[in-house]
Amino acid sequence: MDLHRTSLLNQMDYSRENKEGKPAQSTEERLDSGLDSLKEEEYQAVAAEICRLQMDCEPQQPPAGTAELHDWKTQTTEDGDTLLHLAIIHEAKDYIRTMIDLSKNTDFLNTQNDLRQTPLHLAVITNQAGVCQHLLASSCDPTLVDNRGDTPLHIACRHGDLLCFSVITQNCQTEHLRTMMAACNYHGQNCLHLASVHGFLSLVESMVELGADINAKEQRNGRSALHLAVDQQNLLLVKLLLKKGADPNLLSSGGHTPYHLTYGCSSADIRQELYSRTDPNLRELPDSESDDSEEEEDESDDKVDYDDFEWNGH
Image 1 (cartoon, helix red, strand yellow):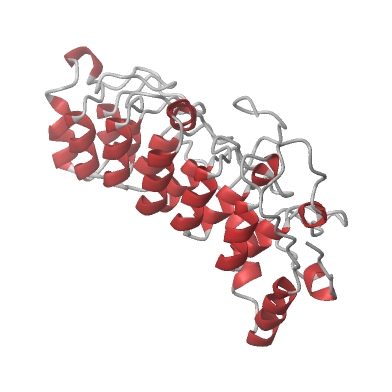
Image 2 (cartoon, one colour):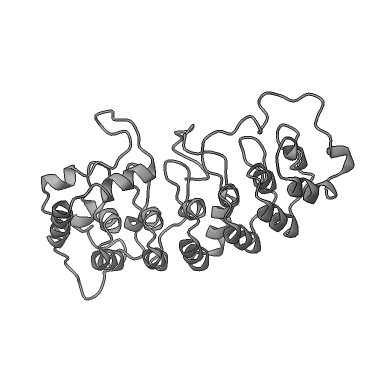
């Protein structure tokens, strides 16, 4: 497939820090700038650009490793996006389907752009569950992480996307599912933590039923999902986690139980819910409270503190 480039492709600057040294943008900002800023005539130009793709579809795909890489698979924008990335961003469904079918069981489906996003990451971000299913059925790797350390499942949990979450968990290999649910991103949070922080009860319940560790701690400050639920003053989530077996006596890195976090909070119901379940020896606040306790350290999820090239095996 040949791509006849125009200046339009070079205008698609969704990106992170690029070659001119521009500051990095978040994943959401990148996609917003690519989708929302397009005027009608610009969108039509993009559609026309995709229509110029000429696919050479053989009746049978040659055995892996014997065919030369199609030219269209090597085409990328300044942001590292392949034509499949662009087709997913602009929801060009026919071209998405054709490119995936021509790339089954190949590493092309796992190509990462400059933000280290795979096509599956972008399919989740753009809420295209059908594309997620097609990619997984074609043997893409769902465990790869982007420049925030997020797998596509992390993104679904952060956004509360139950449909993409269901497609990923139901169509990936068992070992991949375990890896994704256990993996912590560069903020030290796993999928259960993200769903808990944002109060997505259905996702929390589904993950626990799928085998997620309900007592897993954040890597930054040792808070469990129950700590996070108390911190968010989410009574329904507190009840759900306790019902599913969350440990109310689990200590954070600062030595605090979930009950300790109820001090100074307005919800008497949460305090009452935890009181009888908490060990009497763990109800009183520790004698010395450090300034770096998790109550005082509520760092934003949007700031990336790591730029490692390898995390969780990737």
